[in-house]
Image 1 (spheres, rainbow, N blue to C red):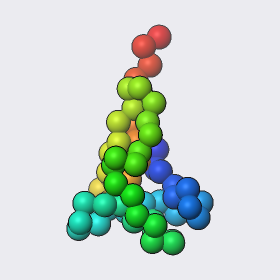
Image 2: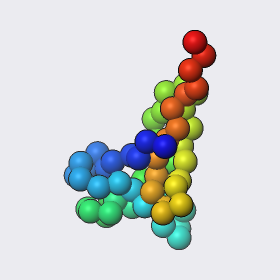
Image 3: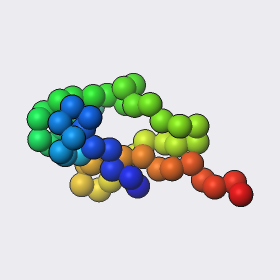
Image 4: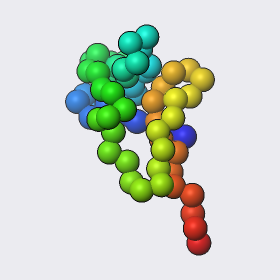
Length: 61
């Protein structure tokens, strides 16, 4: 999984919240999965620590 770092501050990853959003661990900026712009074949994921990330598209080569 590739961790998604906050674009607002550029310092920290997003962590899952109880409200179903993701909050930057540094500046508290919040996003939802609707805010994610992923390439075709990529999927978002949450690791065991609650950090938001994405899985790259599988290689078809």
